[in-house]
Every structure is written in structure tokens, then in C-alpha cells.
Length: 356
Image 1: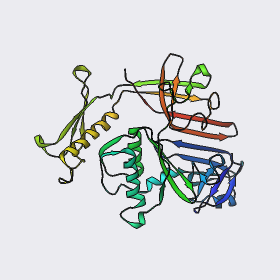
Image 2: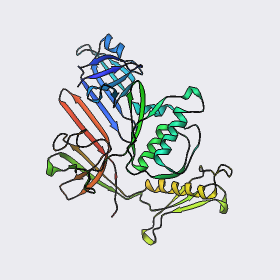
Image 3: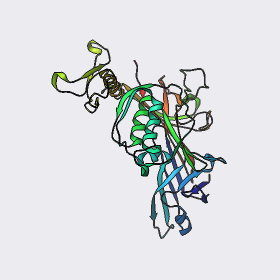
Image 4: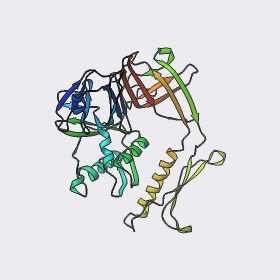
């Protein structure tokens, strides 16, 4: 695998075809990262500068660069016996969203999640409050299967933080690529390839299929809750609140949610819309208190299925073990590594909600 080095004008300045090891990590809800370990020389070091880009040959076409990484750190390791080494690390293009804070409060009232995400990009990158904050990010082709609506207020943190919280709540991913010297961003939803559907071919990782080498299952209900009391602005008995959830008796497990940061902005937001936001805060809080299970396992790529052909980052796949535990989970991270021992692909699966 060759790795191309691009300067800040996206011109190829070097092709790296010899290295000791490379680790390339992609993530669904947030930005990925990389580590490149190679022998040192002055010419290579001069071409691996901060802010330059790396892209693998398999992620390139004549017009587009996908899965691009940004060089952020350089480390020189001296070794008189085995030769000096260079360690280059950084993050993928999506980390650009870390470069802008959510300077203004954003109100969402019954708008789609996709519209809200693009509103955040527009307000903080494309048409921000100050011209020096502009980073031109163009619209790619979104691929949304289920577009939900949301009512909330978004304040503080970085744009990357906001994207992570929203995408994780609604099951969306996003990605960025370079085309014609421009940054493109798109929002997408992975395909369901589990037994829960019959539209797409099933992708199953199981010892029975000889493509799941190891698997550990863990079920967690300690923090489970199904009813949220959400308290917003006001004091004492005049404090506004909302109840999210309807379980009763011993099955009812309540949590208290402080949503005082949700504001009606001195009457700018109606009481009806404000209470919608409180209910959204309740749904978000309960999403963090579900009964969850995790399935961790190492898979063999290209045995039955091949990454990038039969399944992709963000897809939902079926996982089964030898004890008749069968679940569907989303692939939220893929670590691709290559060294003298060969290539390896390690996926990370999302937590699954336990419903029984």
C-alpha cells in the first residue's frame, strides 16, 4: 500500500512506499487518527510537515481523496544500532470540526436532525459571525435513511463535540473528503445488514462461519432508567419541568435531570416550544441510561466478507457466539494496521440496547 503526501494546496509532494508500520483508524461518530512509523532521513522529514495531508492509494480516485489524514505531530527517535526512526501522527479531515467552538446558542424546534447539523456547519464555518472564522466546507451527497426531528438547545463546546452528541443519539455518521481542492462534508447512515431486515444481504460474524476469532459479551443494567424528571428555568414551585417516560410500579426507575441551561431567552421561545426542548433533554438523558450490552471480538477480514465491499464503517451487522447469543450492532470504528507481520483489521462494535 502506497501513502501519498499532499501539501496544503493538495499537491502530491511524495509517495511513501516503504515504512515500518502504519495504523489507520476510522470512526463513525467522530474523527479518526493515524500513526506512521518509518525510517528517518532529511528528505522524508522535510515533506512530512504539520498541516500536510496523507491519503492511501486505495482511497484515491482521479478527482477525490477520501479517508484523508492531517499531519499534526512529528517525533524523532534516535537509535545508534538500528537506525533513527520518525513517528508521524495526526487526525482525519473530520477533526477540522474541532477548530471552531459553538460560539452562539443554537435553537432547534421540530426541524430534522440533518438540517440542524448543516445549520451548525453554516453558522460556524460557511457564514460565521466573523470573516476570519470562515472555512469553506461544501455539501456532499447526504445518505439519510431515517431523518428524525429534534427540539433542543445546543450551547458550548466545539462543533465536533456537538456533531458527536447528535450523531450518537440518532445513529448518524459523517465524513469529509477532498475534491477539486475543496473540502466536502456529508452525513450518512450505515446500512442494516443484520437479520432484522431482508433488503440487504446479511453480514454475520460467527465462529460457525470461521470469521470471528474471539468474542466477549457483557450485559449492563446498573445505571438503567426509564423515566426522567427534567427541570428547567425558574425557582421553587415555579420551576418548569417535564416528565419523559411512563413506566410504573417496580419497573419504573427514575432519574433527575437539571436542564437549567435550557432557556426561553426571555420569552423569545414560547412555553410550548420550551417544554418540547425539556422533553428532548429527557430523551437524551434516558438514552444514556439504557440497559446495554457489548460484544467485543476480533474478526477475520475477507473470510466470507470484505471491508469496503460487503460491509462498511457505520453498517449494522449480525454477531453470534457459541452460546446462542445473537445480536446486531453497528460498526463504529475500524482500525487498519500493516507491518512486517501483515495486515489486520479490527472493528469496534457499538453498545446494543437490551430490550428484554
